[in-house]
Image (tube, rainbow, N blue to C red; front, top):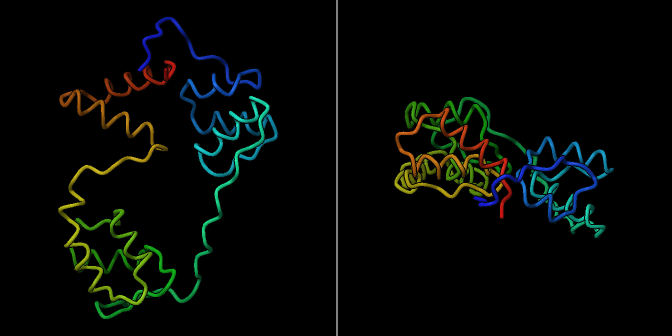
Amino acid sequence: MSTNTGESRPALTPALTGAELLRWYWTLAELSTLAREMGLSTSGGKVAVTARLAAALDGLPAPAAPAAPAPRRTGRRLTAPVTGASVIPPGQNCSQVLRAYFVREIGPGFHFDAFMRDYIASHAGHTLAEAVAHWHATRARAAEPQEVGAQFEFNRFLRTWHGRHPDGARAEALAAWRDHRARPRD
């Protein structure tokens, strides 16, 4: 958090420098508006739009776009009814059919967390019974605090704030967030 008191966030305009853009918190909506105004692409999420804007504001070439993800195989998807013997096909998504099966087998506490999403995406050829076993085998790790991605700055801030203020109210956390994002990052 900044110690620069009295400094306020500048207007988000093409007159900013890339360094000044990076000093402040901006929402994706704000960044996308400026990108459109400057004729830049708004694709790729907040991190990509921010990098593209910072380069353009400094008169530099746009950063190389990350490689496009491999196309998803669009083949047969599981349809109801499914059983533990049903085999996960390539490209299967975390569908309502799977959710209904897992809730029936695991109970109402089931949800598609990162462990299950990854399993479904990368375990074509395995059965749904094996997926249920994977759910149970990953519960201890799933209960541990997971890393919050950098693109989820608000969520990261709230986790840290509540860690420091365990009895803090939501309204206090949101006020602290507004104060945090109004300050420069340095």
